[in-house]
Amino acid sequence: MLIKYLKNKISPGNPFRLFYHQILAIMAAVYYRFPSRYLNVIGVTGTKGKTTTTNLITTIFTEAGYKVGMTSTINFRVGNLQWSNLTKITTLGPFFLQKILRQMVKESCTHAVLEISSHAIHQNRIWGVNFDTVAFTNIGEDHLEYHGGFQNYLRIKGLLFAHLNRSPRKSRIPKIAVLNKDDPNFLYFDQFLVDRKYTYGMGSGTCYASDLLPKASGTTFELHVPNSHIEINLKLPGEFNVSNAVAAATVALANNINLAVIKTALEKASGIPGRLETIDCGQKYTVVVDHAHTHESLEKLLALYRKLTKGKLYVVFGATGGGRDKAKRPKMGAIADKYADYVIVTDDDPYEEKEWRIIEEVAAGINRREGERFWKIPHRYEAIKLALSLAEENDVVVIAGKGCEEIQMIGDKKVPWDDRKVVREIFSTAVRVEL
Image (cartoon, rainbow, N blue to C red; front, side, top):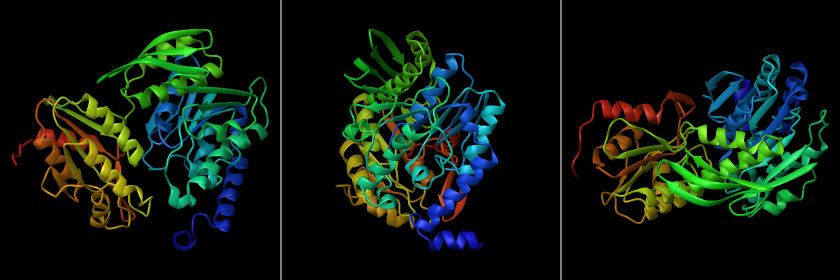
């Protein structure tokens, strides 16, 4: 009770609180005997695409014959053992992190692939983890209220690269940075010294993609590497997923995995749970569940399906509560208004905030009257049900914000929830609505 009280009273950025986190991280690293010393550790950071890139890297290294461990926002892996991340935390606390790294060593894993959040860097959760390769996907506006602005957010992300060069070298393992050449903040990350530096992008870089052929079921593109190129038939749709795939391929190339293995692995990779995941219950229209929860990711998502939709495009979404980046809420509403034929604003993870207040802040960006292809429905189940009951053949229903998450945060309670299960449940008892 005392710790919970202090957490509520002391701000996350308070120096005493950060010192407390660092002490925990030191204790965890010592207790588990610095397991990252015995692994080739790959870190993936950025605003969007971290989870997909982390999973694709793991797929490639596994295809190459390595035994791999992984931590991400949605799943964990130690060799052949895999399980879901139900915590809603991208990079968990230091005791969990050091423990799972020790498990990887015990199970004879050679590589660890870790998704790293800005919170984890700022709060010293990754102290004592000796990284060997660090990649960044992109930098956008996220967690700005927590970090106190974009420049602070950028600086925190940069610390991961700054520490990379200063960390102890392991035998025959160089320190490698993999940088997105297309990102507007590329030069900021390019300043950090490392043993080897690789870039990637859409059209230029050490590795790059060209000749994209988008399809509803994925994207075909040409992957270029130094002195060679090869066609990749990726099962993940969207240019942003091509970028994630090229990032993963660049990490693999930097770690001496050959192009044929990279191609095989990327073409084997099926959809990442909750990322552009299609729910097929025999309906005549398409239902897509995705984790998009910022205005940038929502715009990429809806722009993609605007192009792919023959009929009408529906979007069901909300915004996260708990004081998280309130400025993005009307921006998300405006993006939905721009791309979707039908907009349904609902709850997401309200935490301690009132659902209606969040919904109204999102709706402030929508230039329609409620009832004119636009509804505000504070119960997520009913919002999804309305969209599914209205959709017809050739339509697309996009359900955004939670992806494969299996809980919803209401107040301080974790309520069981899964958009995918809800869709299947609604279809099992479907009754159409005519408006």
